[in-house]
Length: 319
Image (cartoon, rainbow, N blue to C red; front, side, top):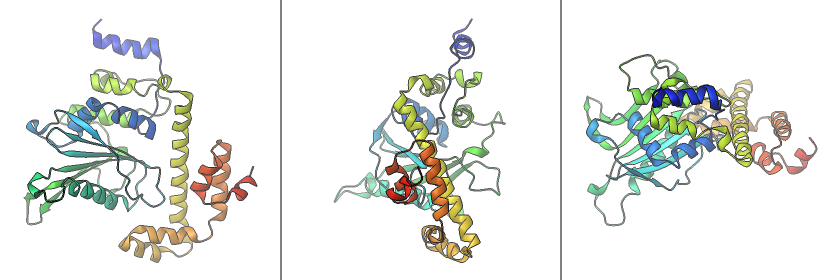
């Protein structure tokens, strides 16, 4: 039996392991925020680089505090790094799409770009910044394309562009491996992110045949995490679901209360204002229902206060 077949046999017949979802804050940072060689493999697979542009080595950069997307405090997970040439990469996992997200990504990458220079240094020292956004949602429903690459180009001649900032958006729900012309390692990494769910116990042979992907799979074995980490893992999903509920309720209520005009105007100036107007219109019952669910899941009152805006006294009455 070959080594490759032995790995597959152990995973499927002896170990019978359960795995966690790699898109969770805990697991995403465990895999890509603690193992630079795995992040390098992932980036080389995802980025539209030519052979001579591939990342040779990289180091992590501190995660900066940047403006949050309204109502989506917990939905974004990011990892930052730079390679030996100075190119910077900002990798973000975004669980829910909002109209503000592209502006946030642009702001984030632009700030990273200009912060490279110290006082009095020349512009020639600036190195490119790449923003890679993995979206667990669909934001371009009119096209089946899941991979979106943005550059600063000349409108009349798209072969000409200004180097410095590039943006990659990947709509994970749209991804379906179907073409032999696709980059093999890119397909495997995207399958890793889309096929492995909470509680998955069966892993496809193809994923186990690639050493880096197999190592990333081993990093998300449920048995490798402490009870405290698993509790954090569950709380993260609870926070995501709560924020989704808030966001959907805000949009729904905005329509029901005739807030379409306010939301449209909010989109022009930044959608935050329009959505907040929708939220302010009679959402008390919605908040109470969310608080009840949070209490049932054992969340701390301080977290519920932060998520719902209810007072401690109001939450205590719901017990």
